[in-house]
Image (tube, rainbow, N blue to C red; front, side, top):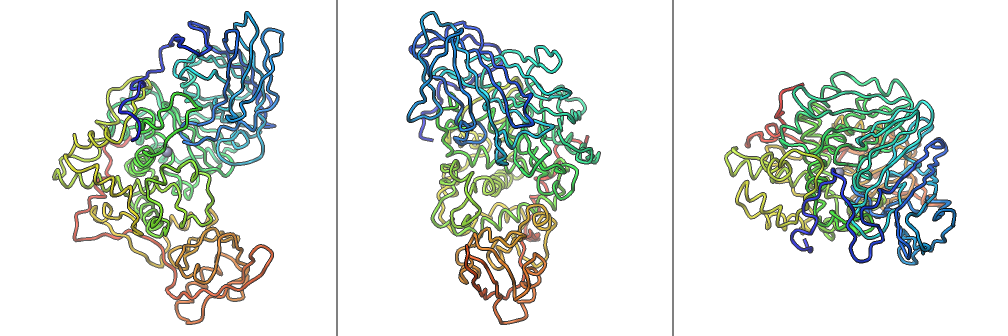
Length: 634
Ligand SMILES: [Zn+2]
């Protein structure tokens, strides 16, 4: 919002090779050959990648940089600390490098006379740290998800849209691969891709492995190929019910019916089924989806993560094709501004969930259980009274990596879940005020659809968003969003859900979603009873300020050892909270606080409480209309 109306990169296409234009300063030569990138993944079982590059350069001082701000992660998390063995040469001559003493991602070099090219060599030495998209969490003995930003250096200066690069990858014997990248040649395990912009290379991860399976999910009549590319280490992980495959085919059809244009030539869902990580990273014509081994085969996982692929695919329109100006940066060193993440991620969260229901990946009840869980969490976040939703977006890069401990007080990346509530409200306002003639679908078509074609990006401002909504329905959208974004009310914005005919309620009955969360995420959700989130191992993960557990002194990081003098287990804990309803004595928890034991007495007697949506018969059931498929089933 604080940047000028359209920046110079209003529309950028990355398909046709573009000759680099030299301005004052940049050291990339005009009409030079593309950078050459050689990645050897032969040692990936040891989490090692060997990288060599040939980078066109002129004699003199040059700064080469390693990507820092990673698209989709909205954070400065490029793993520069994992780079080892860095060396530069020009011809046979070693060239010393000096790291910038402020920007630790930048390397300064002085190249000799008659230099036309620098050779760079380094290794990415991944660790066993199983977090995020680090190589350690993207490599296994039999599979690899390669994110190219981790294996490149590039000259600081020109936009990455105009820096051309050609990549070559060597895989271990018998490995197969899947990627949206255009292939030039393959000789045995050496794969050479066509030259393209650095932006497009970084936007096109590659999934490889021994047990790679490809499933065509292109709907009938759809000219663009859509594929599920799955990598797993067991056959059981690939034993996915035919009805689930059909739902993914429906998803492709539903996105076509919603946006009525596609900004890619083909689409690959790259699905990594290994480890414990659950997340996804969006790209124009593919997505990097991370699930545990049984993530697609197991019904509990499908309940928990049924909207992962629909979320990531939605980003091809909302996030990639249309992008907030603060996230439409020139290169990977320019800091990103997250102030509009409640659109980039918030609208995607809403659409990803709605599309999961429209596609049959979720039943309507599954969608409602998710919405109830989201609404309850946001409605029990005391952090709402000091931190606005807008601030969660602005400080996203801090919050992505923050702990669950004191999360309700700190707030988290709430622009995802609260986005679902707010965009449902927007959808409802449009439907109600136009007597059902228009909906958010019309806005998606107009703002995110446009004309089909290859990957293209159009940045937008808050004002552009408001103007586009006003084209669908004249309304005080600026005032509406301003109120939602700056509110310090302790209550979550539940009006959209309520106007759609459903209200939040709490009962002692656990939803299937809650049971799956406890089984797979190892958490007992007692936030709406005691006011605490507790691990199945007894570790206190969060405590809600002002709730009975907080008043009693329970603190995140403590470990519950016993409950009413019985050894802690999830069953013992559930039973103790249930039976406290008929007693006046407080629940007595023996806990460890670092090396000390202490007793915490929680005076709570209202039994177990879990969130649900219940139908409000006084209003039409607009929610069910929203969840109805737009496309015929595949
Ligand atoms: Zn997202």
